[in-house]
Image 1 (cartoon, rainbow, N blue to C red):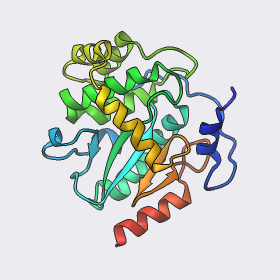
Image 2 (tube, rainbow, N blue to C red; image 1 turned 90 degrees about the vertical axis):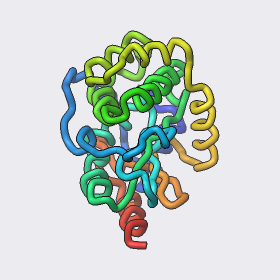
Image 3 (cartoon, rainbow, N blue to C red; image 1 turned 135 degrees about the horizontal axis):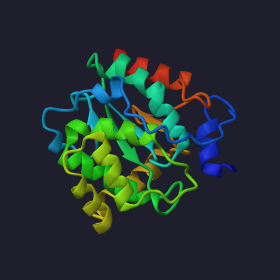
Length: 226
């Protein structure tokens, strides 16, 4: 598999060139762990993008892509540590924003689906997020169809999978998709997964398994100690 330049930069930026390659296979598993169990703000409807924790400052942003295999690795590894060590204790909140079109044109469908899940069933959103990442098909496949995404939502326990299907078919969140594209440009992120911490963008992972980037850990520690 050949990495695009942007995705290679994401994989090999702040901590040096790291050989990231390959796709996670579909495990057809129901995920478990701190991300699926994390709390969401008391009034989730006040937040456009999926948010975990109290929603209060300090807020960090995870920039990802539903088809990115390195985001799946991050989701199954270092993201869980961030939730356990920083979000659950109440030290910070975290929001997820997608980089639309980074992998392929059809990955935008997954952006609409994720935003629909956050709107119709925010309590289940992070379970859905982890379910898709754990069972992520190959990035080379055009798998982000309305039916497939609605099926993921149903399997993850989302209360209204039909709303997810409808959102994809109608491209219901165009304004939010465009706002994400602008946000990514403004942050200067080089690829996914990325973390925006106190206004600075970082490569989120330090190796192919999705483990910690020491620069991210240092920035998070500094943020919560301010």
